[in-house]
Image (tube, rainbow, N blue to C red; front, side, top):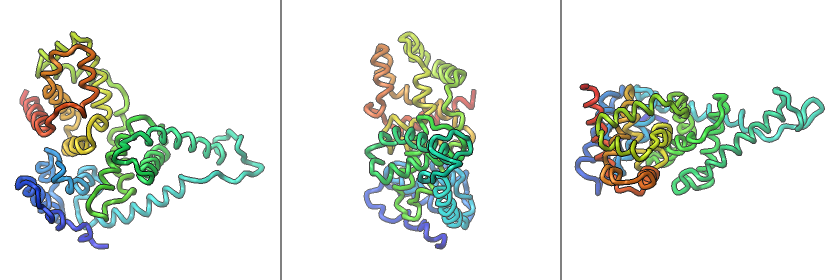
Length: 335
């Protein structure tokens, strides 16, 4: 398997029906990927608006690069995939086991920490806990049984290897990454092992993401007041709890409230924010509120909550939201 098996040249094939602007983006990204050493800054500059359905073919390689799964030196990409496929297979063998044999020193009722039976039952509890979320996660896109099994394994093994408990929200993260991998037009990139390692990298970066941090809720609220005090004051007067938005938007990173293509595009933008991800996330959240301002500013508490908890049903121009978020980010840096 050689580097050309990534078939970078095919990225610019079959462009019928794709706008001239998006064709140019595909070709510009392709030119960067042709280099032996990828220009990460140049790549980020091109991709910071995110990928639409017309340019989503770029996502697989770009995410692997921006997450740090692929090195910038292209000649190692094949080696990374082959090595991690083998590693992942070994991890599955070592950590997903059938019930152990019963013997006089170990039995199903044992509660010793070194008991294979005790560890087996703990694994079964963890698997079952994860499975309850997996069966209702992105059912439309990942409802096939083999995809559910992949998602369950990825989450289970991540928890096992990191000695961490499973918490809701991890399933949404893993689902987006698995979908990104398995929907890639390049068959060489359609593999569970890449999804697992990309998810492991993401969880390392976001290990504190599943805790409510009141100071960040306050920072978000203060920024909204600075950008649009009338909207802020109306939400406050209607007793809007900003921690609700924090949980759904900041903890879950918009992974749950949108059609999967829109969530993926938002993540494109977030991954391009190598050192300013949290700052951009604030600006993105405020940009969504501004996009919905006309409905929010006249709504009561119940109407506001209904709008914000059903974003997928709202008339939102995601391109406008992203562009406004970048502008807000630039304005805040000037202050």
